[in-house]
Amino acid sequence: MKKALLCLLVSVAGFTQAGTKPAKNPVVAPAPVDDSLGFSLTAGYDSSYIFRGVNYGDHLLSVGLSAPIKLTDKATFTFAPWYGHIAGESYDELDLVASLTYDLGFVTAGVGYTWYYYPFSDFSTSEPNITLSKSFAGFNWFAGAYLDVNADGGDLFANKGGDEGWYFETGVNYPIKVTESFSLVPEVKISYGDKYYGVSGFNNVIVKLTAPIALTKTATLAPYIAGSFAIDSLEDLGVEDYLVGGVALTVTF
Image (tube, rainbow, N blue to C red; front, side):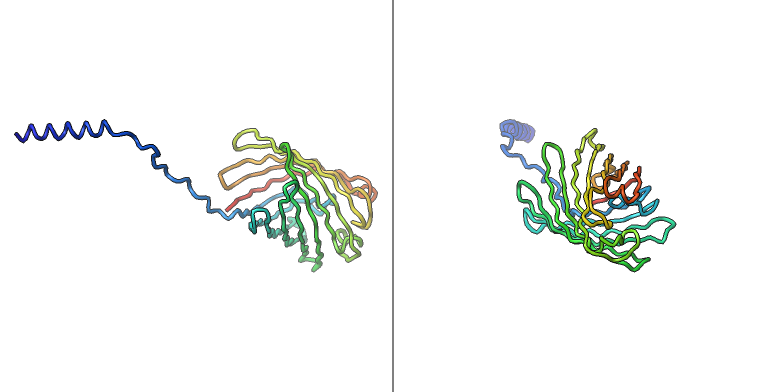
């Protein structure tokens, strides 16, 4: 009797399980939450420190932080300090950079301010700026106008104060995805100075190729090679053309 009852219970259980329909909306494990801050820390090496067409020295070591803070869906405030040291030389530079960008839809506009400080010479200068950027058809276009309050006296050569000078630049790059973790980014940029370096006219052209390599989800290694070609007023000052290369490691967190 017990054996017959046990067989009956097993049969009922089997029938019940076989007749049960699968859930219409099965429970799916939630996707992992991205709790990163969106900040990034970059350490870099450049064979020469070319700043706006002028060579300040060889073997630049640098570290920089980018800390964007989303204020609204369209407005972002970014604080980006940077420190550079030329190996074997008495040249250090601290840049404190702050900017506010707003997505207007047809273009992203920004206003910013940079304070440059050179510890070994105890010299500093400041630079308000306006920037524009736009991505279209895979291209990234950017432009900026920078007002250096001490540019006219050639301070970037002699660390002496002078009158105000404007520096304008515009350029475009085109990221090319080669593999899931490797890309090529060609870029070209041209600049113009108004009483910058004490002269007015076109400054230089930069042609650059960067090859970012995603090492992990948060770390990217980006070697590059670039040419800086003096034109117009910068060429009149006797500035040479330069071929430089370097690499940067960026970690986001």
